[in-house]
Amino acid sequence: DGFLYLAGAYAQVNGQPRNALARLSLADASLDSWQPQVTGSGSGAIVRSIDSDGSHLYLSGAFTAVQGEPRQRLAKLGMDNAATLDANWVPEVLSAPSANGPSLLQIVDEHVYVGDTSGDITLRSEVAVATGRMLRVSRTGAATLDTTFDPFADVTGTTSNGPVTLISGDGGGRLFVGGVISQLSQGDIRLGLAALNADGSVDDLSALSEAVQVANVGNLAFDAVTASTYVQGSFLKVNGVSRQGLIRLLANGVVDSAFRPAPARYSAVGLGNGALYAADDDADLLRKLDPLSGDSVPGHTPIGYLGSLSQILVEGDYAYLLGNFQLSGITPPITGLARLDLLTDTIDESFRYTPNSGGGIVRLAIDPVSDSLFVAGTFTSLNGVAVSRLARIDGNTLQVDPVFLPVLPATPTGMAVDGNDGLWLHGTFSTINGQTCRGPARLLISTQGGLDPAFDCDRGFLGGGSLAFARDSVYIKGSNAINRFRRSDGGVADPDWRFENPPIQVNLSVHDDRLLAFGSFSEMGSEQRTSLAALPLVEFFFADGFE
Image (cartoon, rainbow, N blue to C red):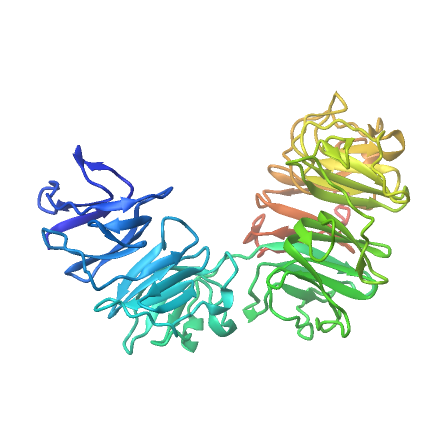
């Protein structure tokens, strides 16, 4: 109609008062006298989204009234000079992830679609009520709510799936929807782009077109008997085949087709006592799986939790659980760090560690030789004992060691034990115990965290990152390279083992004869690798040409 319509959180345009809605002449950008009254409150845009059918504007936002009439975050305005409010079109947003209303409002054919990527919307129109990531009402009449339309039914409760935009399809009422999408109704996996039929069901052909995003590999578990590796991550497909969350790689790196756990958002995995333990964040359950098939172990009762597990570390008869979680059904509650008895599959309720308010535990390492559990994090005390960023827990008494007091100016980004009195640390720290020291560093357990005098860490900054230990050598991810430091070299990087230009965010773990690098990446050095790569631990003998 010759105007450009603007929506937002402003109070004036070109020095003239306008409240969240205005229109400019397309001819000369002059401000028009059109001035609907939008009132309400919100932390962001009062009018968040708009769309037009050619004669009306449809609005979503934080408002509670438009043109003096009650409207709960949705409204329909005429594009006439008086901005006439449609008195019959009165749907209400009862709840949404943001006080600013739905992030998506879009007209396609005879419907107005509203949606959000970060949570469910509850919508009421007349007496009908519906909840979902994407809903629709008729754009005319009394805004009839289609209570059968729910293409994101299966992802309710997650925070990673939802629509960003949509357009009309190729006839028959079809829609193309794009967004932060990995799964739609009936468990259909779609990556970024999907086609919906008129009733909201997923068109099978839309699986042929995907917006592929590199997944993140979060944790690995290694079976030394079979040399197989369990891989946990955010992936939905592996080598083009639908596999969500958890796979098993055989010794040669081939995906084990017989290992088929139920698809889920797994967040951690650990192998112990002949079983595989996996944290299922969709169901908030720690499951016990058959390590060959991935099926749930018959008769086992999963352990419930709220939040998310980030690591399962198995040592001996126990699995140590780390993350941002609270175990269900236990009073007083156990949060952040817990121990599972693998012989009875029950939580050890005597194993309780509470950091100071605002502190947290982010890293674990276990040394069976000294019967020690080392924890690192942002804490300044643990169970009331003054310890800063690093603490030792006695494996016999389960008490926090009050005399193990290394002084660290920053939380370690990597930590490992070597079974020979050494605790290895890496990170962005510049001193340890008041001495100049940059990672990697080796602390002596027997001297209560004193620096190893035989391993010099007075060196230039390499960049903080992950760390792994194998064969008397420590491997660290720095700013520009993955380096190896052999303990016998006294703190000097091995010049014959250096991997240049790794991805920015990489975790390291040693399995058998390989150093595994994992995270979220599409290249490792100059080679194409997706989220998981293997580097050899072999020595290189350049002097005589033998490699």
